[in-house]
Length: 310
Length: 284
Image (cartoon, rainbow over all chains, first blue to last red; front, side, top):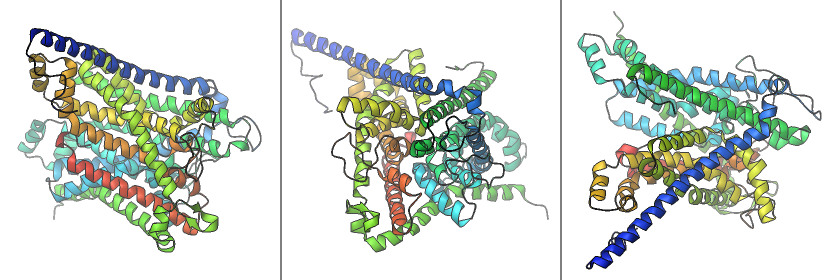
């Protein structure tokens, strides 16, 4: 794109000016058409992706015997994914219990206690770098530290700790945004009345920031349920048993799909199982995304009387 | 003595905030430590620049996989960036309010689809299509690039929308007021003003594409050699780590960690580039 291009030539005559204007309008119409086309293509791709996944797996995914059934022995057909469903939600809950307090506490420090300086710069750089680390690297790091060094073995806990680190930057950033949206006058009013920083935080700021933090937490659940690369070498990809203790191994749905892809030959209908699992996973993740949106919308409507759900 | 609650709170929250720094340092330290035996035994030149990966014969060159990562990422950017910027322009400059909201929600929805699900779709739908059209196996860099393009699109798009939104309305109004068409305004005023922010989005998308694992693993092949075409199997760094870490030991395992280290170095470099050049407002 150079600065002096044909769109703005030196114009001397009425005719050339008219021609340039017509050209510009034609280019404008073409560009508008192309931009509309690109946007519609994007929507079409999205629709196709969701439709294709559901088309292949929805009938399987919605069969109670599949969702609530146990996997069968090798070589047999059929079998359900209940241990995987439980593993997924177990993992989401355990991870959230670990990452939410740390993330919110970190956000409180950044927005209420820290002065901009070396420490905040270091924390932000740490968060940015951490969120750029590929999830497979998180996975093999979790394997080194939690599975091997801490001796947790392939376990829900090792996976949850790994995913806590993976999600920490996002949780922290989200909580920080929610806290920063609390008007400064609230802080000043509370501090002016003689309340301490910690009291102000607990009684004034956190209650106002809670809906935003909740929305972020639900979105985090969606991300945890969909995560596989960081889970494969920390929790496992196949297990017939339902995890009970945090030190039990498991096989969350997302990681289990990888198991069927690599070891599919073990059962006849592996493609059907994996397809059903993919469809179910997509439905659940989309449901959590909608739930987060719904909460944000309801809260907005309550406080401001306006806001759009879609 | 009464406990100073503010002081305690401050210390506790400080520790929480330092977790990010501690985490990234720990990751870099542990991965580096595991990678050192391979770097020592194989030598950095052979490790990073040899194309010969044959653990049984004692060869641990990772160049094939690094090139796979670079090529699939470039492909993803070629397909994904125009799409993302086009949609961002649609949302910010062209669309009526309702259409803009619909497309924005759509992009957010796309961002939420798990990568293993995208990979599964690529494996069951995209690869067979490519196979039919190209009379090959179908799996390879082309399929990887397409899947990656769709996966990085929401990131690039969201940040481009932010960047375009921060261009002051006065700029656009002045341009329109001088008689420029909307497209002339976009090309000569809005886009140049938003350039920095869009670039940040592209770099972030690049990072995502290089680090993506599962979606690529299901459509790339795999094979540990240079592909003879865009539709023959190969590997990327992430898929190589994924598929071999389970059975690897000794130098082979260490070489896989060296691949992870290479990825980490690239990611840290990308973050530094973004911090250096990003306009303050769109810093991710």
